Image (cartoon, rainbow over all chains, first blue to last red; front, side, top):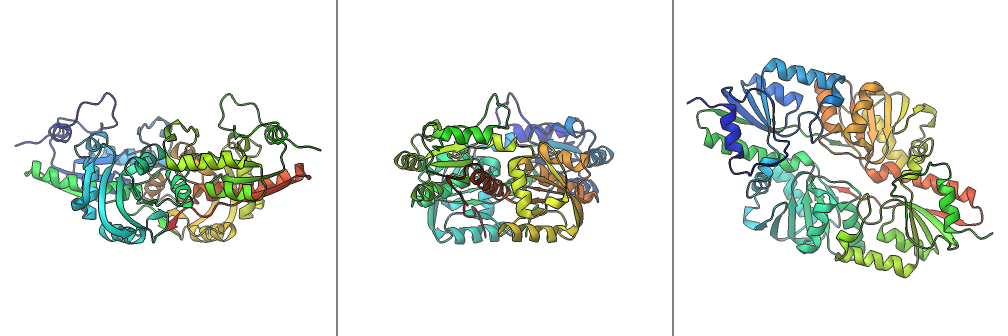
Length: 264
Length: 264
């Protein structure tokens, strides 16, 4: 049976209420086009688009915007050589790019979060999934032990930590992506009596400074920042498995992005 | 001669056009109060406020907001124990806190930027100060050599780098604080034919992903993220020296914040 882009988009969004405004759009490609092979990724980088096209993929599902901003507008980049080359690659390869950001975050529970928890092998510790945060009760571990566990499970080379590496934690809040920002992350510490927040990223003067003050006041708080991609890629990898089960006649791959940062 | 808080605020803002809307406000203290001793800092953390009060400082000038957000509103924190303890410290110590953020960034050239350039010992390489960016032409150095220079000069333990550490750079754009975001930083690469942007911080899916794509396309681009505090503290330190010269009868100190992050 022929599977179209529209069929896949329908499947991806079938449990999600229609949003008034969303970044989840088909950037390139015709919804009626038949899907020969599809792939998911955290970020449709130039390299991932090349890899996907070379593998015969004609539908790439990306979590973040293709062009370096959340709203993914491109008018400001019109004369930029990097934008132009990437846009040319997209046109020449004929690949369709669908963004699944708002949708997957509205799965119940959040599809990015369940992928992250699975990658951490922490399903057994989840006590509650709230709209933006998942709450876990871990067997007592130090911040350093948790950081090492996270790095090992996810194959990442560093995390940034605020707090005492020796501090023992049990109550942990997990926040994917940019939810490390203060307006989301700071209230969790008090509302949920958390020892530790593990998040993707967020402005440095917000949650990190709150944790610094808390520690100085003798309160037991810590923060681990995984990196944005590191916190969300597992969710897009898990999505590839779900799509493979939903469309057994179509090849589905996940393309990992290489690590973005080197620490020097 | 008696120096009041008002006198100091006037001096700090005398070259700056009056802004319609600004975060530069006196959070605590009476403008008519006599300044016994003053201090500058990047961030009025709980610890810095204690140190300042213990040193007899009754006017603390901070670059970032005291309470974990740019707009520095506190209604959302009313029931938060960390906020309450810090607010109590401020009231009990009687210290005045003035924020100098928008003002110092509007000095010509930007006072935070000149402090940063001085700390890097790069005054001799500046070719132009624009409104948000300072442009430098360095003797050819690799990204790694530049990162090591920056760490040594500023006494910081790590920077995050996107790009090839071995890539040779001469055209460098320096962006303090949060100006590492894509809307500010990305156009600099094209407009100014930059090899390297050195910035404080910015969202990971913006400038870092642009640089990643550029590199993959064979374009010679790199990014060094210093950290927000690391990029701006030198400017507040330089300000302490300027204030000491302007008010020779009043003691002026700079309080450094300890490093915020540990890399694990």
